[in-house]
Length: 214
Image (cartoon, rainbow, N blue to C red; front, side, top):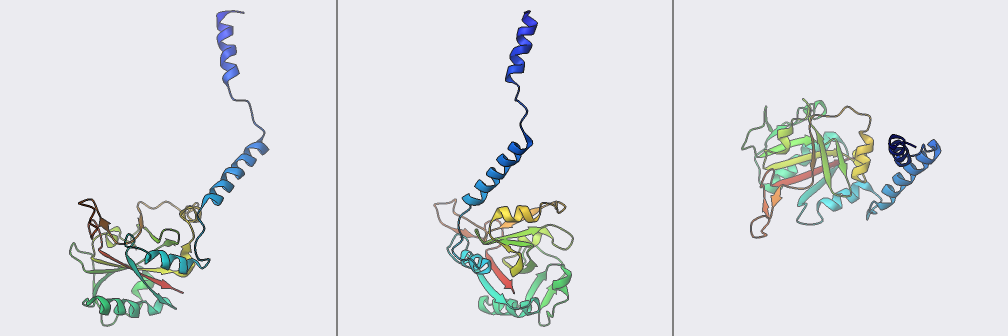
C-alpha cells in the first residue's frame, strides 16, 4: 500500500458514517423534549396572571398593570394611569389602525415622537409570562422609537398573545417574515452601574405600564 493510499484510508476512517434517518429524527425529538422539560414551571397556569405577577414582582422589572375587558376600554385605562401619575392628557399614539380608531377624546394626540415626550401608548405583538417581557416588531405601524423616547411607556397586550416562555415566541414567529428590528422589553429602563444604585430611565422609559385586554 502506497503512502497515498495510507493517507486516504486514514481520512475515510475519520469520516462520519451515514446514519439512519429514523435515528436522526429520534435524536432531534429527544433534544426538543429536553428543551421543553428544562423550562421553568410558571407559578400560575393562567398566563395573563403569571405575566402580570412577574411585571410587578420586584424592583428589577418595576412595571405596573391594569386590565380591561375590551380594546375599546383602553383609553379609559390610559386616563386612569395619567390620573395616578399626575400627567397631562397628551400622548403619542402608535399608528396601529386598531388603536387609532378608538375614542381618545379628551387627549391631545401628537403626530410623532419627540426626544422629550412624556407618554407614548403602543400595542405589543407578544408578551412572555416567564420573564414579564413585551415584544415589539418594527414596522410602519409600530415605530421603534416609541419604545425608547417617552418617559412613560404604556403597552397594550391582548390576553391571547401572552405566551409562557421565550421559546414559544420563537415558535410562533417561525414562519412569519422577519422584521427589521425586534425589541424585547422587560420592565422600565434602569441601570445600577454606579455604586449599585438603581437609576430609572437610563436609556429608555423610566415607567412601564401594561394594559392586558381580555
